[in-house]
Figure (cartoon, rainbow, N blue to C red):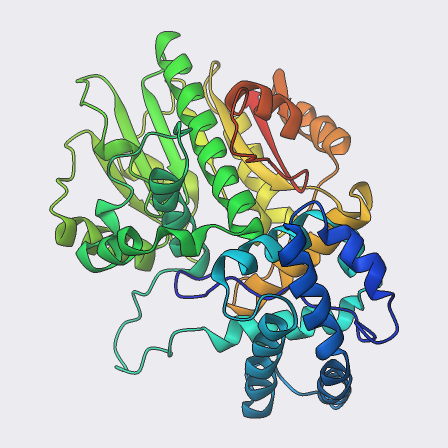
Length: 420
């Protein structure tokens, strides 16, 4: 999901195109392709049925032998895998390729017999294929976390691809810097595929919900806003300063150095009402660093915590929420989390496995998942009095109603607003 990573080829079952009924697969493609396109795809599937057998056998052998996704041999297999996928369906026809990938994203039957272990293994290899080279300068590593860069990139892509906007963020492109902004404007379509579309709308909706909740809290008299894991969030830089409002961005020291370098490059001014709270959790606590940055524990505060909890252990997530529950009455938090896999459909679990493999390959493994009912009981035990759950249906009704572009949310992600 890195910004330089093109759309990944869906990983087919080890017996694909040889043992599976190609006519049945063609039927699944029928509602996405014109008759002539369907004819092309059916013929390509037939032409390349034998090619998959040898390639899949080699990949399976490498996996069984304990090869790593970044090994030279696996990277060669990943290149061949991606090339064969294109040849087996759309060839060099970019428009047809987009339709094929859309079908794979929406039709579980196209990968109904998928071998999850091989799928995850090859997805890791494909992601590694497009990883940027590691830092070679031997100095302090201020490179961003891949998840933070991915989030910023998708937020920027939303500004170019989706109308009407869910999140109107005029700085989303600017903060990326002139080079990446120009790159995105030149080819925004590279961020339009089934996986990116779901992730892009997820980023936009969760940020919009958090900002709406903060504005509502302001109307109720709350004057402190803390953004946990801020990344390249631009809220503080595109809203006017109010003398009695105090904003805090909390992140790792390296992430804040990266962000402030991005701001300087983009010519974006750092507002006077914003405080940067750099935290190394191995040495200090959120409470200590907020107090040192001018946070007033006697006054209510709103926290937003987006795209972070899933990368932390359950203990760390619950410890943070327990602290927030101890804040002044009227305080609250809006955050997102991953659903327990057992509560998802087979298709959703497969998508979650793919996502987990991708982020793990980039050094950020998923570490926590929650059951909404159990989560609510824990939050109430901590002292939160009002709890509101946001699933794909309620969020779609709020932010996606009336759209004609087919954007939709995944059930893998959920959001909660909890108030003390």
